[in-house]
Length: 151
Image (cartoon, rainbow, N blue to C red; front, side):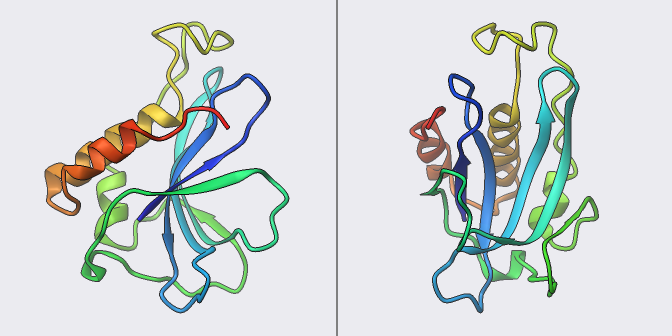
């Protein structure tokens, strides 16, 4: 399990998402994304992006190792093209549905304001829920604390 960190507008926090590579993909750049998508002005929603492919993207991103996950908790859903949906198909996704989405922030254009929340906050909450469910170790908490917030 990885965190994929993607560049956004300059000076804005990076987008964080959980990335789980497909079992049959050799270089590990194709898989599924579990994330909260949106922005602080309108709020965020849960999305499962299946068939996410980073092999030819021009967007700046990086993968950071987060945790080992037992394959019993992961279900690869075959897709022929990238697919975004909100229906959980495995235990990891089911846990994600229990984590509240990040709502609209009172100061959406001030990312330094303590009440302004974003996808990174949701990822922290999701990782805590996975730890509580026993799907990943508490070492993931330390790994997450060291992830870059901007790239």
